[in-house]
Length: 405
Image (cartoon, rainbow, N blue to C red; front, side, top):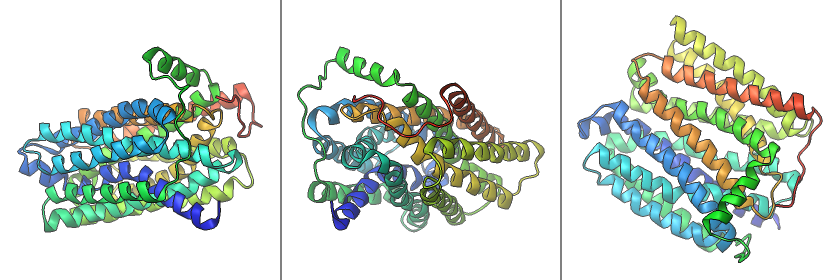
């Protein structure tokens, strides 16, 4: 493909992958207004994040076999259409229970973009280029958490939180148009892929038998649990605990997103000199140190909002490095069933994210400890998994296709 086609594909795939995070980040500044308008509290509104993560986790398992069987684009069109309708429903939600349920439907529609984008990267690009492509995608995806909270804060202040979801529906409609008009079909229908439950479960089981996939899927899911704990806990931490305004919270959230983007682009330099698994292990160790500093600050009360912001920025920087490498390493063994592998990877990441966000709400005690404790626990688990794999499999592994699945 030429440079123009490459850029167009990356932009559309990045927009698809970013739509889910955009639906998370954009309404975070509206939490206090939503809680007030629906006669509830922020912790209860936070359950709409949990339902969203559950929807993404379950939905990706559904779309994985579908995009392998019917091709990538048809499921994309259907899922994005559901997303648009559910967004408008959220704008009209009369109670927090309705909002929680509609956010579940929103996720079931939008998660198709996350599955399809990873699978299409595996379809369209040489294996050796995939970590670099994922880093480029993360640059596009990184725009979402930078501008989404800022947009959400201004929309909430100017028009009310309901219009956040109207804007979200308009964005999804634009992405849908781009998919139809600009995105090529990377893999046509495959009648050999069965949608019978026993065959789907067999394909899923085959994915789990790959030790490389399992290792990096668990590691990436663990660090993503830290990310979702931050997403769920940061509205309370910055706006209530530290007393910042919703607009300033949006600015801080954008700064941390810049850390994620900077890390993903710095990764492109790192993988020129070291293998992806070496980079993942070393940066995972740095992330562990940062998480330890966060939990120490929460326990001792030595963290102010500036210190919290700095440490979270570094945490997001390391996450931007780990994510593209872990995703590439997890997807490397698969070709034919890349959709199923992508679905399981995404489902694991979001399923653990749902547990992390629910835990932040469950352990909410008006302190920093729930968010920081979950970040520290998740980071420790990720590093432990990577160390075990490094010791038992070897230090010289590079990305390679293990089986033609």
